[in-house]
Image (cartoon, rainbow, N blue to C red; front, side, top):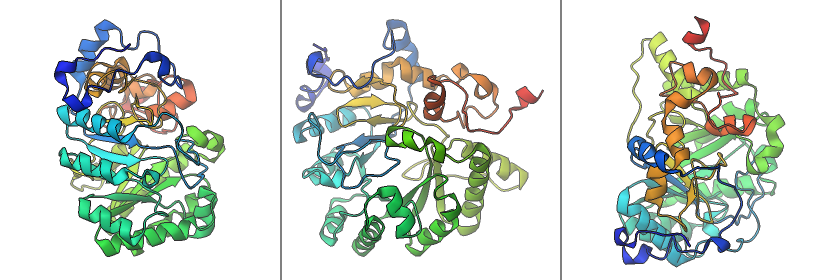
Length: 395
């Protein structure tokens, strides 16, 4: 039986952390000694404020996306958080941090209590945002989001038309449904961003997707570079080359500079190197937001200022790095955040290996730890999709 210090919790959170180990899911094994004593102090010393959490409130989804990190299913699997447990987790979070919480899935709108969860979090002073696929957003749903004070909704578009997007989503009508959902958000006055995952399948379509983003009047465009996890493992052959990766990130920089649209590259920490290289070379001031929904502080944030919580309470550095830091049903999130050896490793840039370890940009980039792990089995290995040669290596 896991032990939690009940004196540090509100009455509502005391049930979390008391689930017998025999009932816990065993989807991932911990590394030997992952929480061993001497690591706790070092991890706690390095811990920064937790600024953002992606919370997988369900794995149920009405689409079957080929690149789905979650490998989502048609119906909720057993063991997902009850409404009471969801409230308890929000209490845990609010007791030690005030992060942005992304309600994601699966499809979060398939939870009947999703607005109860959002409202409770807002009441605790948390910034609750949502990441639905758009197809279930109606005028009524959009008005509910607005009335609750949801500050941002993200909708994924992986193609500029239904032929490309629906091929990703594997459900006919997904593109039209997402665009219609965006229309309802606009009518209700809800801020929205568009997310796009880049693969070989849509690389040439990116300029047209950007045109679509602008026509839809999105507040931001977040561009994700494919990390082959979940169902995405079957798409490894569709990853763009390191050279195309570099070209794409430079193209995004040009779009950000010329169009005035906020563009953020995600799962692409190299963008922060490119941003600084280009700004210095072109004599442009390097100015990016460091607070709020558009904050750009460094490349890989997993385990540093960001974490992912699964539908079963498992805590990971991000949704793509499948190394377990702990489970909120066994230990309080604050304890996991401050004491996990895994998080301590990720916060110590001196532990990075290969060319990432000697790179002059390691503190602002860090390489994608999930991509390194997927390729090598070592989350501290060098980023396999970076073409940059550090100055120390050249010398």
